[in-house]
Image 1 (cartoon, helix red, strand yellow):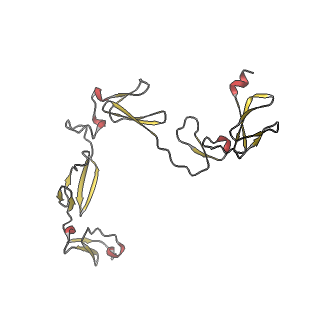
Image 2 (cartoon, rainbow, N blue to C red):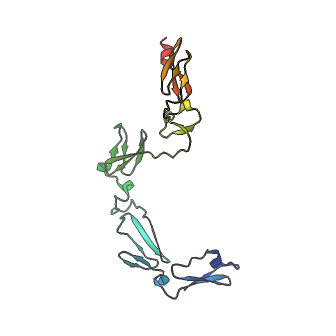
Length: 223
């Protein structure tokens, strides 16, 4: 039996704010409540595991994750990453790579100019990289899903942003049914490009019925 005393008269049983576990039943009392358990495997507050029963309040290292520690509390199992103690000479460096000061576990970045200790992370291009015991592991950034029609990746960025101007979009799928008309009155299919008359440095493109033009600054300087 687990008895809780609280100030005031609050019916935790009806409000479902009690902490009774598994097969125990919440019984409201003046100023508190009781967790009454008469039968069932959950009455003890212990935690059944594949390898056996863990007692209420017991901590252990699970077999499925050498870097975790699990606890049994009131019939519920809670697992978490165990803390690292870099001052412990027997610390598991697999679980605590930041404690690894061995030169053989350090990594050079892709430029060959920066040295990282094991467990350190850095950005390279649009990838996240990490040093793991002397080996570099990189993976692409996960960009958020955008619920908009047009997107574009700005210079120096890795993930697209929503844009309202189809001329700025870089995710456009050309629809040849949506045509444009150039200054000479010639019909242009979506995706077609041409130079503006009397302006060789200006290039235009048909993007699904929209005429999008840009100026080549290097061309302007050379003409």
